[in-house]
Image (cartoon, rainbow, N blue to C red; front, side):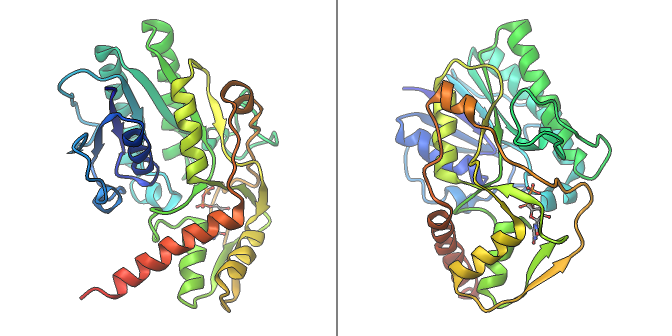
Length: 316
Ligand code: UDP
């Protein structure tokens, strides 16, 4: 049986990954310090092959026994969360990655680094290909997330080159689905919460900035394929269907049937103007491409948010 550590395993993506690995027959050690992750995300898991460990990976740590795979998904990931926790975000993406890579080296485990399209910053090339070096403000508000992710990629490649650690790097583009925190401040949870509660939808700037949104099950499929591949260089995983944020707000009004209005708020500093993955490499080396249409994905996400709003309003 494969024994696998998922750091950030109680987060949005980490928890879906735990599910997928358990389904694949792995024993899973889920590590989280619950800064932005939640026990609720893994509360449904009954398997005796699942172990939940509370640990901040920025602090020295170890795991007893052998490990076959380590998937490093620990980090605040929404802009609102990393603005609120800038030092923790810098630490987890530097010290945390270092500690986790050392563990992989000691255990002879495959190390899988969750990187991000944010390494491209506010891109001057469009769509973004893996060979593009990016356009990142090293001291702006988003730097607390972008720079440690870039450092994590550099460290991962250095361990691969210097110690022959068997590594993977995924660059994750905007992803959505059940278990996103409704208050994490990202566009889809904000718009859905606002639409469901009759509040105005807050579009930042004039809404012409673009993003490309991937449904979580497609992303997890890409992660598992990359994990099983022998590919060491970074691979973009995301859905190339690009739309403006104003179009996204309108789509959410349509899917929810809400009569909320759209209002415009100031654009956050350094907000990327465009973002779209070039997924030629993922198609070629992983045989991967997204399958879930936007409307279908939004409806599943909406079901989840409806239930979570009901559960909270039903509380004491
Ligand atoms: N955004 C928006 N209204 C919101 C939240 C976000 O218009 O209530 C915009 C934000 O300015 C950005 C895009 O939506 O241009 C995606 O933001 P998100 O926080 O989801 O993720 P990002 O891609 O910036 O990491």
